[in-house]
Amino acid sequence: MLSMRAKYALKALVYLAKAKDQGPVLIGDIAESQKLPRKFLEQILLELKNLRVLKSRQGKGGGYLLAKPPAEIEMGHIVRVFNGPLALVPCVSVTAFEKCEECLDFAHCGIRRVMKKVRDVTAEILDGTTLETLVAIEASESDEASLMYFI
Image (cartoon, rainbow, N blue to C red; front, side, top):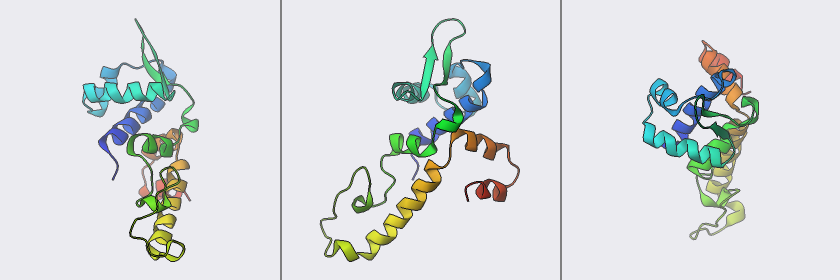
């Protein structure tokens, strides 16, 4: 399940992607427009800044803005940062691999093999979806059209 931190990070990033030509955006404007708790959002934006996904400017005319073009920021990266590995079981994780203690036959385990496919498809979709894609999906009127965008 997507954590609130990951969801709020993505919502804030999509908002900033839409406002990319307007210069820095105040935390208060993001929080109010997206109906996000300001204190929680401050922590998330600071983490995104430390990851060099965002940059900030202080003083008059200051605020947050994307550190890279929206086409270069992948949804998969953000989800992994705030949610951890995409794998549903540790024995198929790329970043946090761990063999299951109760595993009797790692090579032939049907659960592991199916969960690996789930991880692979999930990674393909999330890593193939950028902020630019999310902005386009939000502008689309059709769920079918937005889903076809990924195929």
